[in-house]
Image (tube, rainbow, N blue to C red; front, side):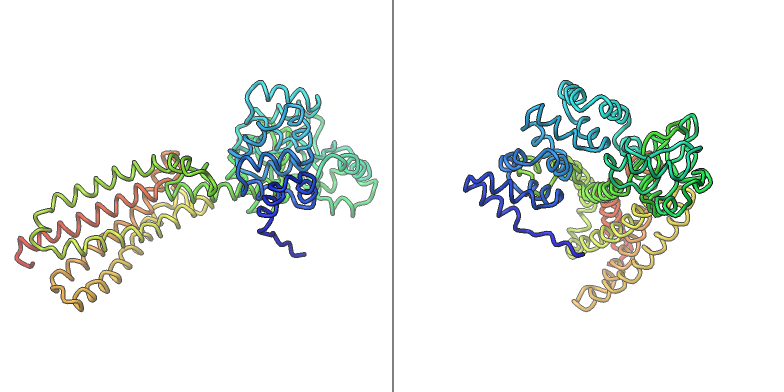
Length: 452
């Protein structure tokens, strides 16, 4: 079945709001998927988004509020009463409820926990102790588990009983008398087994599992490696405490991708395309301020060779080419390296091989592009000696680009810093300074030697 996401939902909602027909708005929203409602809310002005959110049923609101970014979610939640918020949170799975409650002020969080029911409240409170970006923070307490002395028939009955409250049941978890994970059974395997067969005989005895403190990025890699639908989460003693489903991991993958993408562009991960200009200005300014400092550092290198440029003005025309090509080559190298680190393909153990490879790639591309640049310079009437200078400088700077593009992310990884932040600031600074220093320094040497 092909699902088509329409782009006219936002405009249609706006027209209905302008007409003041709240019943029509509510009726229109009831026919939409929660993800479409979330996109609609994100596309409206905050004031209109609040109006629309208040028209949703608790069940639909509980799903739609999870589809918007954190800033809008806070605005929507703060617009409804405590009683309404309790109804919304009560419709959520425990992991989603924990995420929402963790963002509330302490007093509001206490009221919601008291209002959602004792059993659910206890489960949510258990999840709240884990950092949000760990397996414990991503897991949900809802799962189907049976003792290892259960039969297939007893297990099927337990699945039927729990299915009223739990969505996306794909596995049954088998535990021992102490609650430790002893195995897992896929539903299809369960259905095909005889009713009197002991569940431990068809269980996978060494299932893939994670501890509560494992980072969410590592969890995503495990799902990808083993093609999982559900992953059991255990505590330090091996006791089963929750499960992570593939839909939660898709969100993690998207979050990690865009986080790296933003950091490589020098952006704050909280910024969104529909943010007001004032918010975007202040979110972008800090990195621009840092970049300004590095730009002055590169400019100071140029100033050192000011006398050389005054003697041969054509150098001022050509040096941005050297720096620009170095920046482009460094971006290519760092993108490949950061991706390799993110996917676990690259580690500090095989770093030497990668450094050698990226240096070789930089050198080879420098020789080729430098030769082409020198040829073009000769064609447009620039002295052959200047063309030779351009060739050497570009070769050297692309070598620097390959080396720095691979080395800086590895160093940051070793320092326990996210390597994605290294591109736009540190590596570009290296290629700018390296390009200007090489080009203008060699020009000075050529002049003293009488070549220029």
